[in-house]
Length: 332
Image 1 (cartoon, rainbow, N blue to C red):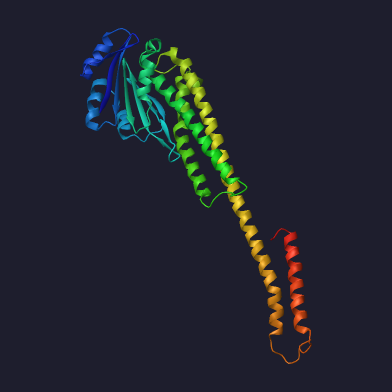
Image 2: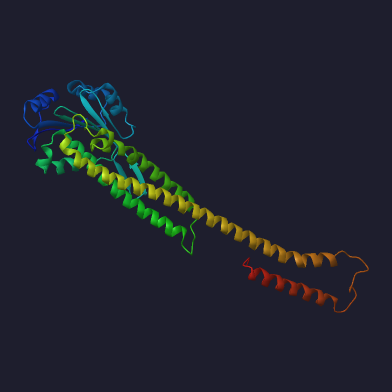
C-alpha cells in the first residue's frame, strides 16, 4: 500500500495529488521538483499502477515484489534500481533481523518499496525535509539519505553485537564457571547472527563504490547527481568500517568458540584422570582382598596372629602413597 506521497519543490515538501500520473506530471513540469512515493509490502495488483505510471522495468518490479534480494545496484533504460537491507537488533532476544528496501530512481521521481520492519524511512524523510540544500539534489538526495541512515544504523548494531561478544567472552573465561553447558549453543547462535548481518553489509560495498564514482565506475551513475559523489564516498567509508568490524567479530567469536571447546576438552581430560586415579586406588585393596579370599589352605601368613592387621595396614599405606602421588601430579 502507499504510505506516503509528496512532491518536493526547491528543497521543500508539498503534498502531491492522489493520482500518481498527475503527481509525476506536476513534478516534471516544475523546476527542481521530484515526487517521492513510499510503499509498504505492496501486492502485485497495487504495484501495477506504479509500474505503469513510472515506467519501471519488469525485472526490477519482480525483484521488488518478491523481495529476498541481495544488496545491489542496477541501471535500466528509464530508471535506477537499488536494494538495501536495513538491519534491526532485538535486545530482548539478542538477535539480528533484516528487512529489505528497494529504491527506484528516475526522471523526477523516487519510489521506495519496503519489506519487513527494519526501515529508517520515516526518520529519513523528516531529517531530509529539514535540509533544503540537500533536497535540491533531487531524487539523489533521497537515495543518499536512505543509504546513509541504513549504514549509520549498521554501526549501532555493531556496537550491540560487540557488547554481546564481551558477555560471551566473560562467560567462557570466567574462573568460576568456565561457561555453562549451553554456552556453545549460545556462541554458535551468535555466529549465525553475524552471518545474517554480513549478508546485509558485505554485498553493499560495490554499489556504494559505484555511486561514489570510484574505480571503474568513475564516470558516475545515470539518474544520480555527480555532486553527491562525496556524500556517497562518506557512506562508503562508514560501510568499510562496518565490514571490518563485522569481520573482526566473526574471527573473535570463532576464537571464543574454539577456546570454549578446548576448555571442555581439558575438563573432560581432568575428569578422566580423576576417575582413573580413584579406580587405581580402589584396585589395590581389591586385588589384595581378592588374593586372600581365594580360600586356599596354604597361603603366606594365613594362620599368623598379626596377619589380618598387617594386611590392612599395608593396604592403607599403599592407598596413602597412591593418593599423594596422584595429588602431586594434579590428577586429584
